[in-house]
Length: 281
Image (cartoon, rainbow, N blue to C red):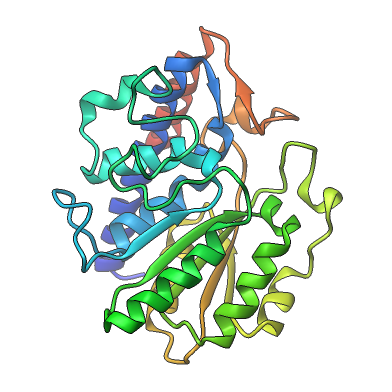
């Protein structure tokens, strides 16, 4: 890795740290939430927003922007954390998370939040919405990309597989999907609820350009995004991201059930300290 690459990775790592910190600060407002997911996907969001996507913080509706569709709406706390870091949301709203009249509901709502491109929550819909967005942008002659994030639990949904098939059929080379494989969903380990491996082989069979990386390795994620954007074939692209729930806060990583975490009042300070210690290591 040369000096330029090392500097880029250091900057992206700092953004990921601040996204995690923002998520913890929001989680403390409610004392609970989808903190494990926010911590696990922070590296991917850091690369998306600070290493790949085109947007204008002062104008979230700019027509030339890349779109980011959050299919797994319960990850909203993670996306808000990235939107704060990107300057799309003002910092003084952070403490309103999940509160009455807040623009930051616990599940993502496009009608409430600047930078939120779709309302999520009913899992499995983001990819098919992304297909429609991609077709629309192509018909407008736009060179913008559509990014969509969904989770391994959403692989249980038939709509995901319809989206995979239709995106390949339409040769949507302006679509970059990310699937967060943390092997955790509400009912237990995702691979036990509905077996989906070998995932990369299945995605390739559907006609996608597939990469599988450690989703908590900034350098690997950054390279995967670069490869996806530069891929020359007329096909959709997907990055399978293997992640660790609670990444960066060891005592949350170790919890057996961390799909929705209740954190005791004194533990928030410990979590922030653990995150800072990891940053300094």
